[in-house]
Image (tube, rainbow, N blue to C red; front, top):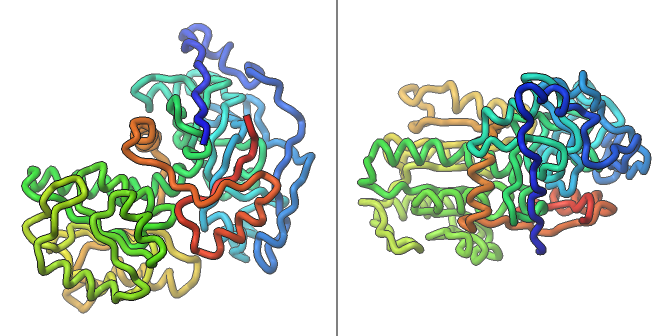
Length: 410
């Protein structure tokens, strides 16, 4: 992939001129009155069968009042798909009540800021509070991040609105198509691993190499997760099908369990009884094979949580990432959260991750991308015209890494 570099940002406006310069009319390029956008009015039979490419869709409201102090209008260069994109759209009650139609799906993006809000709380001032480099979100700044659902103005369109707490400056040299896949999956992987590993490392005072098991290492979240855990110095074991074993190893996984040929729980129990071999970075494993953190990106087998005490340390954390929108799934999560271990519930601390926006975390992921510590894994980059095919690929659940859509070629 060819790399794109960040546009050179204008010097931050002074306090006396911020209000005058940070306005929606202060743009590097004219903003059109219409845009191309994939839209749906219903999802009967699946979103992929009901999307229409509208060549003259209305842009989201982007006047000064609409953008306010914490939103920016972004020209989308690339977008990435997540399962929640179709799950939310296809949820019969939630979609009907929460999303105005016609609507465009998509949460994640990389693009260019074309309009910002006004005043002391504008995007310029807001972002200065969140970024070490104090880079202003001014028109022409290349950025990446995610938008807040539910909204009718998703990222599978030429323009979208993003809150500044979920927008980071694109590091120079990072391809927008690679950064587009960070938003939801990258933040989810970060939040399911980094806080727990850093606390574990601090508590152990570097006496033990943290051992992490990632259930589902070849998907969008798992491919980020393996690399993030390795960047933090963890010993990583992951699961995937046989055809993706080499991919997971190339991302740094020390051991891989093929769930198509092995019982995952039994394999982990066996690994917990022996001292692990040297890691791919040459480090020796921890004093035994028990895991300090389990990250479940799949949700199955159910026994993975209920028997996690058989292959984890007493203080280990079990982090569940994502879930379908069924009643059964909701009841299972509630049971894990509320049923105490002494009454027959789970024996390990259970955490369900609801991804939250965090500029500092996006910045750190972007820094790792720039430094080459992690890399994007894109299953396929679809042209804007093939979004229905992109959703078909996503729904196979066999994609390796992220599915990306090139919205605008530059």
